[in-house]
Length: 148
Image 1 (tube, rainbow, N blue to C red):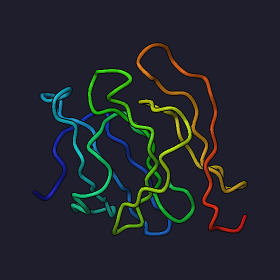
Image 2 (cartoon, one colour):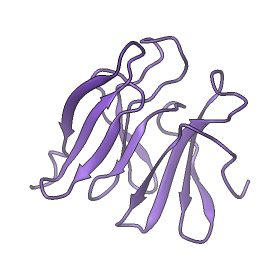
Image 3 (cartoon, rainbow, N blue to C red):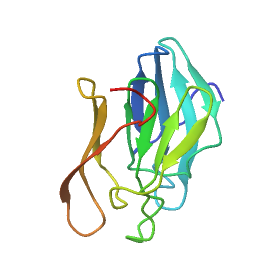
């Protein structure tokens, strides 16, 4: 396949270091509940390329952002059985490999708002949906191996 298939509830982030857009997961409209996707694609401005088929578990409704040196992915869902089908894990993509960096922190959730605060070298996560009511909490994540 030379391009990702149609999907929704996926996440994308621009990797400024590598000048690529990274896309992970989501689900096809037809198989929304039963078959979340777990593929990684990259867009170089001209074409899509499959980048990985290993890494985080297939999911939809997750958040992604570029965090200064890699792309960070947090949360998402694999189905509609809340809270059992929610993820609360954190992964980084270095352009070649996904690595799980943390599995504790914010409670598992889908649809978190996520962005990078470059002035403080922190990823900020706000809210999300655990299946009952919307959350209004704020969390920060930073890579302890990088001097701030």
